[in-house]
Image 1 (cartoon, rainbow, N blue to C red):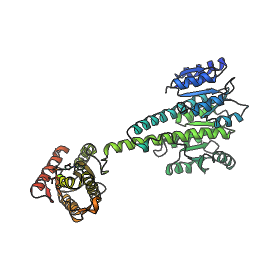
Image 2: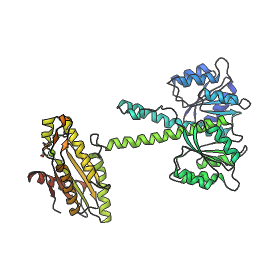
Image 3: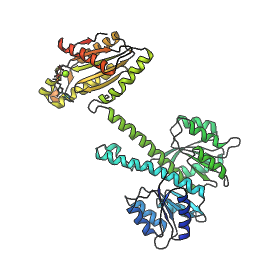
Image 4: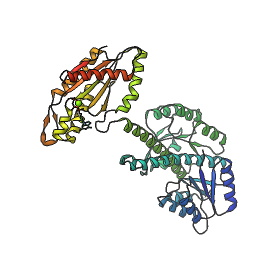
Length: 455
Ligand code: GH3
Ligand code: MG
């Protein structure tokens, strides 16, 4: 992971120290000796993370943080406040100023790296989201364009073997999350798999149980592998923390737990989870848009071209029948010419609805083009396909189509051609071609009928 990190401190020795450690981990480091130059750098260069000292003459860290967060060009940059151990109130002020995380001086290497990496990962995901939101906005997809939504409360699972600490952690988390508490780590695994949590907090305080076992199980289960894990450990358990981070635990916090630190770290993880979820949803949505026909909501031809081959291969491999039906609306041009294109669109939508209502869940219905539709029917013999096609024909003919055009109702009919997969050397193109030839014959024979291609 590489990222550009800005270290801000008025004491050159402190800057050098952090710089050296970060450079050793191959981060790209920029430095600033005061608040104003830090703001200028963030404004003019792309910075992935700011490590910000609090005590600085002229403009202190709180003010720098507030200004960064108030400026829309820099608000997305994560800020880690470097606070003195003996000033716990600084953390509250830091949170109020919008800081994303804290590090306590003297800065410990493990903490520095785990926090920096965690926040850089979060920023990478949210950068990608912001980029997609821009694109979505440009192409008019408003629903995807809201990247900078306010934080939604997270769903947190707290796994803690002791009642007293459960209560303390619960109190700290209440304002920012819905928390479920569970004492038994094995039950917690099921709980996590069955519900959708944004964060699992594992307090390493069980009597007879290795908390890393739970962490590792959470990482290996399909249903829970993407949930961030925050481990709560004893001071001095560095070895366990290193192993935990290797296992994929996302962050850790030491006892005694500072409620503000817990809140800041939990918020970071919940944000990251939400960002990731949205990113995944946006990928899903983009894919759906690419394979869906706008007008009817059926799959489009691009999808059919990709998927028909798979369905054919599967049917051939299993020695199962597969049939397809191509249907084309009769004299559809007349609808457009008489009632206008919008009325034509309404008929197409209603036609698609009837197709959808006719087919089984396993069938694939697509708009093939204009007023032509294709239904792919796995596990369907020619006889069955003929029955389905006839049922669809009746569904179209049997009930008139209403259009907004002054309460007009139209009689619509369709012609249908069906074809069945030939075992062995059949291809999607050849199968479609046979169905299309049958359709052409149905048109020639007088329309409003089903014709089956010769086997
Ligand atoms: P046939 O019975 O031989 O199929 O006659 P037809 O009029 O249905 O066939 P033709 O191919 O001559 O005309 C198809 C028409 O479908 C022409 C085209 O403008 C119209 N069409 C294609 N796509 C759309 C669409 O998305 N919306 C609307 N409203 N019309 C469309
Ligand atoms: Mg037609």
